[in-house]
Picture 1 (tube, helix red, strand yellow):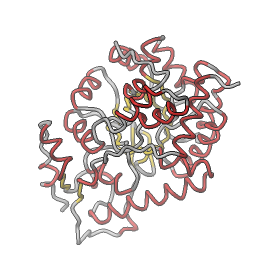
Picture 2: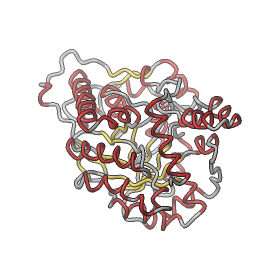
Picture 3: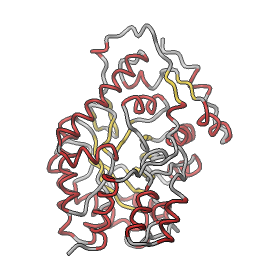
Picture 4: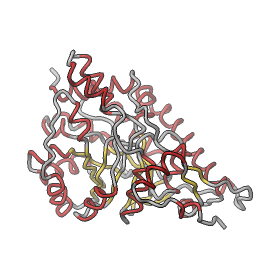
Length: 366
């Protein structure tokens, strides 16, 4: 018989695969323009997408984002995703490991990732509520050991917990608990939002306590308030359905959050939240991200098999290479220097928040 957590994990998979759970907000990338270079002065065949994150080499600046685990169905998805990450030389994160930390016979649904991707950059994953209510250090160590991880995601999900039927909303002492984990574990700790973005002031506090990186996970992609809306509807929980509907589009757009974090810290930044193409990835890196991450677009392909996932990711990588060629960027380091114009509502948000985007446009690609 499934535990409540297993049932919830399965519900998340099914809803994500069958329902429209994306935010109605845009990511803000439609306001970001890489300046076209009509004379690229390079051969597209020579464009190199490889890069390094925390001394680990990736063949493209992509991490397959945390999605799932904790059910047999999730184990199959993780197996498919890990096979593809290994084949294409990408990073991969697992979903929250709480289910297996509470019921150890579910560990295989997570550690299948390391078995299928022995050489990949693999990220473990724990949530803030688990750090607050238990022994955060032991929880983090167990999650890392479970999958022989190269790094640890600590995810922030106050919005999801607020609208979830079973939500745990005590986030008191979160910064203190994260700091304790950072000081003890032997791998990089990356703090990750879950679809609502990270502001500059929060980013500064996270860097102050020593985190190695920040994954912005801004608004414009998966709405976890939306996912929980559908779960609440299924059990006729009118209150939480209403909360999910009301806060469906809450958050800081991905592009705006990315600039806020990049401009206010010197930490490694991962861009996620509505990343849907190689052009989105190119824009993210041009704005200062080290790598990008995507999850929802891979759910349905993963249910079909590794070939479907591989085909989609190869297409996205080719889109990235094309954007780099058109910007005259031979490699990822060059892409970080190309001129970019930030316009529209994204520029307005950043201007109101005190950030000047003009410097991006003044770069020279020659």
